[in-house]
Image (cartoon, rainbow, N blue to C red; front, top):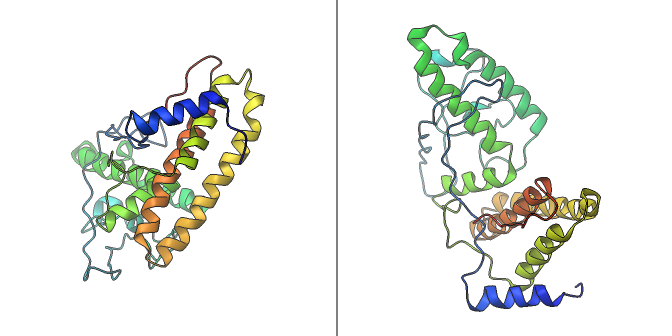
Length: 254
């Protein structure tokens, strides 16, 4: 383990003794922007959870026929996965894999959204098209991001962590690592100073994704939950590096 600067140790002690542990989660309730153009789509209509025939993994999804106009579907898909039968044909874990071919997912999304886009439908069907387009956007945004995907898969199993402010990592060594990363970002003089940190952090994200793949495959929801919480910290660091500005304090999103 690297030598810890005094400022890091003081911050860690303060965070562990006088304040609650850092929670990396925040609620996200925003209107969904169209990912194809500048068109603004109203906030998503809440998606229905899939219905399971048991408390285990035997779940069924309403298929989404890619050859039929989205507005002609008799019923909308019940999960985000059902929108993309070609790129994620086996659905969510544990039947399906946690990892996804992102290129295939993007290709299928563009094809689907091109047909569902509100501008391509008459005024009488505009609102319905907007609602469906919003759901397609949200499904894609969720599945293409490993953190959102993990949170979503857990929510399908009744485990909510995306908005759980009590969900946090209690490992002091991990918290020290996060605090050190924050200090290094704040103290960077130029973007080049963060290149090595970015590489290391992307490796952390990749490792967390592997852990989640195995945990979901084995239906180990406790490990999946704790790793999802840990992944949120690495994603926070990624976002902080991406938005770095000299002299601007780094604030972990709760």
